[in-house]
Length: 333
Image 1 (cartoon, rainbow, N blue to C red):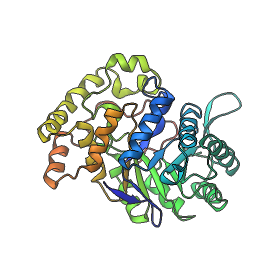
Image 2: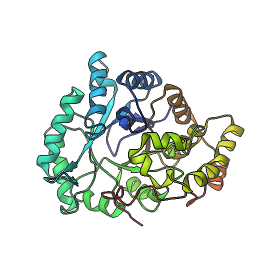
Image 3: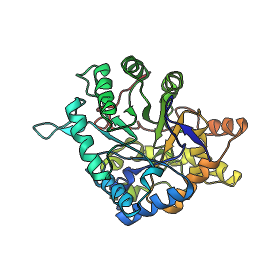
Image 4: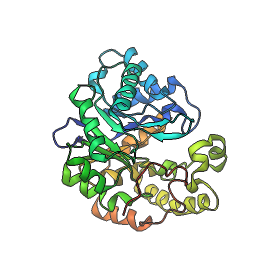
């Protein structure tokens, strides 16, 4: 099992975490009992990091985690909990982002209540508020750390240049970004800058929202789920069929190696640096076992080269976000 230090002087946490967006029906219907089963399997396997947000199911994900902790006294000290805030709505009901200290603290207080804890281990600015200098935002996050409401701070979806600016204000413990064989943009500076600054790079969607698994979402499932997945360009034809065809070769190679495709995808992400942590989401304990298999996997230089020859940079069809979905994250080069 791979365990890694969060940031420069942070705690040691599992290199594989659980992305708890799936606890809020992001990938289809689920139940609290199903979320509990995933958390139990994670603890049994030695996974310690749990990633959630105040907007996942409008608090439902956090509440499920909080109830699990309540039902299992003594578990809190064994898990490392990360949550986020900043995505909200303005007076007219339109989606917007707030990075003020007042907003962060108010939302974090709500998260702490749902989670049933007095402090989280990591708190992120979920999206940047462009009107505020990022140095000021970093300072707002640091104030929460100084008040003892979070042990570490970070940003989700920012550019390397923004990370450098934020780091002039205070140390940034973690940056969360989509990173997988299907999204290689973090290699254009973010992976390197995080390593240089002693910042953990937390990779979400490391199995490509199911494309990098043995059983990708079907078009019927995508239509039924709707929402983010239903409007995502990579899950719309003709992109969907092209992406299935492209990833079939990875499934064949995983079979040749005697491992699951998800394990191969996780193993590749974790091989990109000792500061990289993967947080896949799942609603299935059997799929979770495949993710753990990837956590245990050590790939040779030759195997990594083979994987990257099968799915070279730029293979994916369609953007990773629609035009509307891109609002907030920083594109960078």
